[in-house]
Image (cartoon, rainbow, N blue to C red; front, side, top):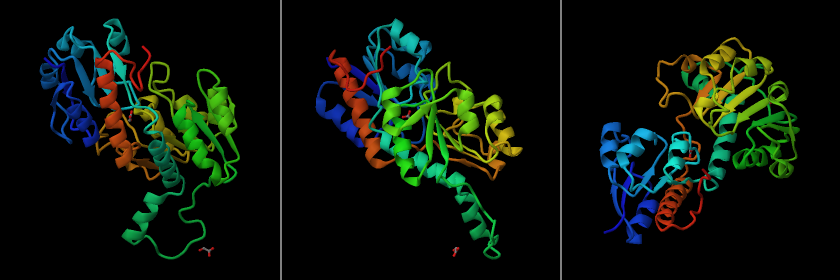
Length: 325
Ligand code: GLV
Ligand code: GLV
């Protein structure tokens, strides 16, 4: 009998086709796009499966792994982020983990640049004014923002995505790239001529500060009052990583008091962010519903990669992209 697989969401067609055409697995799909599988049902669905293909809304923790039982060998997530996975629990059980870096780098970098410009040039406020009668006349300082030309861009967590963002920003005549990380990344930094600095220096010098790091115990709420208080009041904060790297109360305070000029967030805690959240009341805060990788090409590529990782893992082969546990 074929290995059993549970797929926790209706994923883009390419991945499903790969699973189906492989003839190697018997898969069951939570056949919804807009409703995540309820936890209770998930715990029932995973019982006895050999592999799990999940998305970032599913917490893969000890409880879930217990519910799945000892046959579970492979967890393949259709995401580059892995903060929803309890890596220690997976490692302890010898479960292999696939994820989907690289294929989403271009889409995430593009969206980050779009969000940065939207925030710095106040595009959401501007369209709102145009639509609602605020456009009385052309005015000299009305809706002024901050420009990238001659600016210093700071990257918190220099990985593939940070480099891709810098490559796209360089033609906007950025003067200097700086980055902070747990250790210098000379090879990555060289390609964008970025200088390694401390977290404090990153905050102090950046005109645009983009969080591009994974959410780990070390980066949890690393963007907090301390960091925002060191930033210039003309600076813009951008987050396309995970909401958990930010202390949102501190960010609200920094934005509301003018400690920093603006923030563009693709990720929040929780997701969705309740529509009544104070951050939504701020004109200088642009909030997107976690869409950085949301291009057709990329989501299909992520789906295909997640499916291929899963099949390779079940065959005992190296995955195309496997997390080192
Ligand atoms: C999206 O946030 C991802 O982790 O792929
Ligand atoms: C703006 O439209 C200008 O002419 O300066």
